[in-house]
Image 1 (spheres, one colour):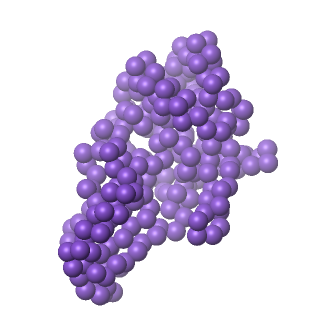
Image 2 (cartoon, rainbow, N blue to C red):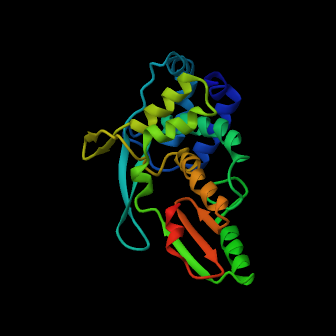
Length: 238
């Protein structure tokens, strides 16, 4: 599996996406326009290091941006090299899960967007479902349980080297003011595959809501359930 992730065609596709997205540098200061020259010289060594299990991701650079509703949102900016590797993992992993995801999930999925989520919610309202319950999973990205997520991933990923690499990215520390803080839970927003990992772990929530017959729309960690009657307390047992 790891060989497929590091296949040159997959990596070249990831390279095009990472360089097109541009974005800020990580802790090493490398810019996206420097990545091509780096890979031309170092790709075979980097690939061998990853395959052997010796590669260690760099810490992410902590950045805080203001949230619309007040407060700050913490982002973790990986190095350009780690963004390339994560993007390669994402491209390989996404098709294996996309077919499993709920049709009520709209966030960070190919061919789906926030506008479609709003239209679906409007469709429910026009059908007579007039009671709206908004769910906001407080600090979801900061509290993701690594063991739980790795257990879910192991259901489809049988290559232990790939699982180890993903685990390394989850546990990579966060650098702020020159100091690196270890991480035992959560996954900073800002990495190429954190949106996919969030959908994988929140798929269980979607399944529970569907089993109970709820009409809902979820976009990442924001969700609304739209009902024909008032909410009863039993709904919170999910």
